[in-house]
Length: 282
Ligand SMILES: O=C(O)c1cc(=O)[nH]c(=O)n1[C@@H]1O[C@H](COP(=O)(O)O)[C@@H](O)[C@H]1O
Image 1 (cartoon, rainbow, N blue to C red):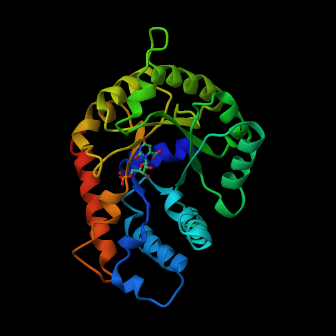
Image 2 (cartoon, rainbow, N blue to C red):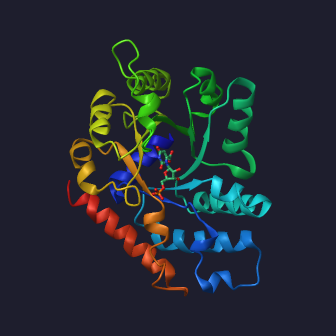
Image 3 (cartoon, protein in one colour):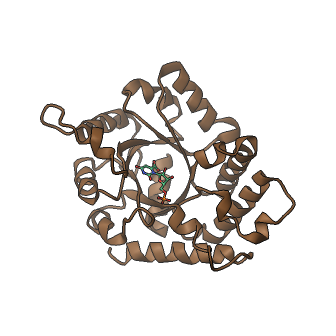
């Protein structure tokens, strides 16, 4: 079961989730000047980073928007990146944030859990209710979901903090995710249905981790959005219940320092530093 694998990797290697939100402006000159397609350039950049960091991270998260924005070239790079991560025996999260329902969601499931874009886990938006989640159930023996619970953005509070009969909306969402996840428990004690909680709200993360001990968390917001290892300490000391994503903070580490093939060494160093920052508090 995928959350068992993710839990094991996070426990052994530390909880870093490296975000391959690859913008063309991040490519070092050694790749940008090569006479190959844009898609191939993006993939070379990602591949080099994966090769240099796979012993340090629990998983990779690939935000599909960066690839969709480049059309077919971008999607080819997305396909190759997902395939490469999985060929290496590493865990891939397709950050696709799907949120439609029923028959449409069945197509999302087929599109991201089978075929060209196959990945291990995807991010989904459950704020339309269980109809947006249940079409993924048939895949959850092997695959996993991270459902948006408490997002990292400032305006998360606009809806997620609204009082819904004595309970904030995000806590109601937490109860729903916990209920949906009960049928998909793994040996590690975590469900194949996990949740996204932003590190920009560390108190809420602590509350959610306490309230839902069977929920595994994807925690974005480290680095570029201000989150630190100290913010994670109280939760991760008690349980390895999360992977922590950083994208720009890691994959732009070479900017202004190297335009050559050693660029990935800078990304490696930044990844190592993030891991140390987190584990030093545990
Ligand atoms: O689902 C996510 O991964 C996500 C949820 C959330 O609440 N906040 C958030 O920033 N993310 C994603 O996490 C990544 C954060 O990137 P950096 O801010 O560059 O580290 C991006 O891919 C975001 O789309």
